[in-house]
Image (cartoon, rainbow, N blue to C red):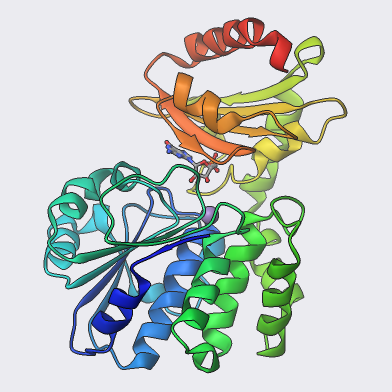
Length: 337
Ligand code: 5GP
Ligand code: MN
């Protein structure tokens, strides 16, 4: 656990008139939105009146049930307002990302803002530029760290059901329902406390994982039956989707969430990838098991990053070329697979 400057932050938070902005990474996932809204509710309870929650772009409908969701500003819909709120903030919380570039369109505002900048995150290799660092790669999720942060501030008793639901959603999604990144007792101790505050785990699980549209379910079937390539000798499986494929299934934000994990669920597969064609690039998602470090692969080959077993990035090659390059890269790294 890296914990720098939280005493300074405590002093800043003592003045409830300050303006606060909470920002998450681009393509926000359950942990980004859950941790941001959990923190948002806490700051409101402390008495802050001006707290903005800003996401660089839109996110999946299965995350939109969280309390406070209607308060999230999607920056790409109103860039001027988002930049204004960041530049005008006294205190800026950066949640679930380790460098300003991960907020893409908001990065320049984050860099130039004169606010006190706080990072709460669990991704490896956090960058410089933050005044306060609350960071632990061992944490299951940023949501877990927000819980610990509130505890550190001496305000555990403030955690109510709204906060608990948001933080629980962050923990559940970032651990694939406790199937990875959740080998520490602390995560379960926190979850137990959230449950005691009234979180209905099965209800939330259903809201997140069992609200597929028929199109989304068919897209999953199509990925597995028509687009899955298994390279057994390389212990790798990957799926690629063209823009046309996605149009066919009326693709909506979040529809491919979790698809890459199916490729990793094949026996003896240690590396899985999902390639998704976008207008001007190909988005790449990587997953691995054990000590195979996809954060390193994403940084080296796809201008990206992430965690050891879950990372992402992009390439500006065509979809076909991206796949050919990926297979060539696998051959080069054969001995590590
Ligand atoms: P996903 O594959 O689900 O988009 O992302 C998996 C993990 O990799 C997440 O922890 C996410 O924050 C990280 N990640 C995804 N895309 C990028 C990227 O372009 N750059 C960096 N640094 N991390 C990414
Ligand atoms: Mn996370």
